[in-house]
Image 1 (tube, rainbow, N blue to C red):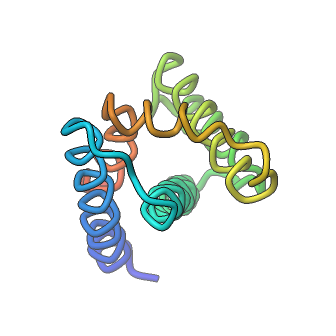
Image 2: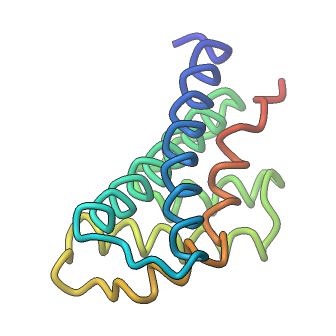
Length: 137
């Protein structure tokens, strides 16, 4: 796939899902509780953003001629190894990948209060920013 086209599509998804989380954040900050449907929407938006970021990471590695790991954790570690992420950023990514894994595989064990706090504090924004950032040659 052409990287420019890939970035356009990635940015579009980031804008859409980021807007959903922004809307939820506004509601949370206003003191309005999210409905069950809205909470599920928050989880879905986070999952889509994180999975999209994993895909972009693999595309970046491929474009640099690096081996592309299967594991999301390994993919982000490889991105840090080629100096496209700092160690601090890698820790952030590892945490958010862990959240994605819980959403996908352990949905009964998700602490929704922590997820709401993450959105309230805008701690998901780095994922949106990563997806919106242009791919450098």
